[in-house]
Each structure stands twice: as C-alpha cells, then as structure tokens.
Image (cartoon, one colour):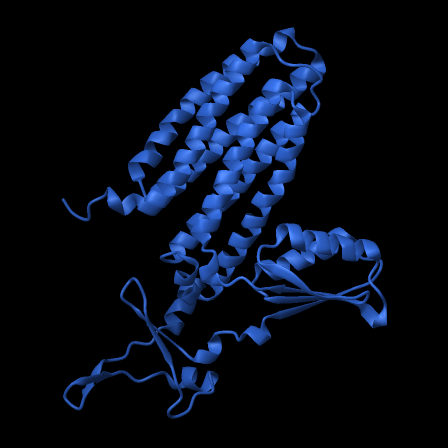
Length: 352
C-alpha cells in the first residue's frame, strides 16, 4: 500500500532552459491549489544533504503563536494524569501550555502544586507565566541554538556516570545520605531526557529544524533518540543501586565490595567510552566496547559467589545491585551498536 502511495505522489517533470541561462521546472497544479498559492507567492527552496531540493510554502512553518496547547481539568483528575498530558504537549513541541479548570471551577491545591514542582524540576527552559486558582500557564523560553541536542546529551551522560560512581561509593561505606543524593539527581537526567526528546520530535516533524538542534540528518535524530533512552535507563539503574543501598544496615565484606567496584569501574568506563565514540564518530572505539561485554559477564559470576555468606535480605539487595551494574554495561554496548550504524560508511568501501 505504501509503495502504491509513493508512486502516486511522484511526478516526473523535465528541466527546461529559458533565457539562455535560467533553468526552470513547473510545479504540479494540484499541489499549488492545495497550498493556496498564486502568481508571485514566495516559496522556500532548501538543498538537502543528499543533493535533493525541498520546496515548501513558508506557511508550513508554524508560527510561534499557533504553538499553544489547552488542557482542561476537573478536581477529579489526578495530578499524575495532568502531568502526563503536560509532558505530551511539551514533547510534541508546544511552546505554551495552558492547564485550565473547566466551567469556571478551580484547580485543587494538589494539582497546582504537583504541576508547579514538575515544571520547575523537569521541564528544561520552561517558566510558569500564569498561576491562578483556575489556570496554570507554562511557556518554553529556550531556543534551539541555546542548548543543542549534543550538548544536552553530553551533560546528561556526565550526570548519569557520576550517579553510578556515587552509588558505588555509597555502597562501599553504606552512606545513606549519599545514596539519597543519587536518587534525587536522577531528576536532572530526566530533565535533559525530556528536553532532547522534545527537540528530536520537532525535528522529525520539520526537517528544517535538524541542523538548528545541532544534528546532520534524520538518521542522526533516530540514533540520538535511542542513545538518549539508554543514558536515561543507565541513570535509572544508578538510582536503583542507591535505593538498594538504603536497605543495607551494615557494610558488605571487603572482598564483595572489591568485586563490585571492579565490575562497576569497567561498566562505567564502557559507558563513558560509548558516549565518546558517538561524539567522535569513532567506529573502532565502539567496536572495541562490544568485545568488552564478555568481561562483565565473567565479573558478574564472580560477584554472585558472595551470596553464600549473606542473609536473605542482603542477598536480594546485592543481586539487584549486581544486575544494575551489568545493565549499565549492556546499555553501553547498545550505544556502541548505534554508533556502528551511524558510522558504518567510514569503514566500508563502495567498490573493490
């Protein structure tokens, strides 16, 4: 069905020469009519990376005033449901989000407080511009060049790696305060995750935005979306390690801690190198990381030997910690595989 649709949308036209030096091509009448174009209507012509030309009316680019979303609510709506709607509006690119009570009612204090806290803590570049009992309005003030996708992803990755290191440090000393700090820091990673997803969604909807957010093409958008998800999950596992540290009441034996530290150091190193391979577009570095995954599995088996001398509660927490460290290494290999896909042209030849 899609192939048939593609054929119907194609129209082969011949290039013509006029005036001895100007090349022209006629536009399909149906397309001109659909876009309400007339003689002397302005058109945007863009040269794409693959050499093709993109022609579109300026009106296709949404005006800022039109990028407003309206969410109505009643006192029965849960705060979580309102937050999910707000996140969806933010992610698809709305610059202004109005959350308003229906029929001149008022929002509950819980609804307003939850939305305010969420917006301030998790929506990058967003300010509360109206806050009344009946309405809360959020406005996104950050423009594309101010924080590129690559910059946001790098900062997000640094925080995720730091969380993992702090979580293991908390484990070694059974430092509950440090563990709590790691859990709170997860919000920072979530902030950048939502921001990056928003930028990538907008770029897919309007390819002209791709370069404005610091990427080269649509394939990069897909690659960076997958990498961002892996980084966000890496941070979640660091928070999970911290949560399990909070369940411990005494230090683990030095041998067990040593094994975990060694395993975690390799996992974090793999994660950091995978991010570096992405930014450097280094195929060979990404390839080497995938080979290291075997070492993580061997370390995991050694760490599991510590179960025998532990209580059931400690053993359960240790098992989850070991799994989270292994998952960090697995996400690093996922990122490395994405880098391989994005950089394969650097190591293959078009002919022999």
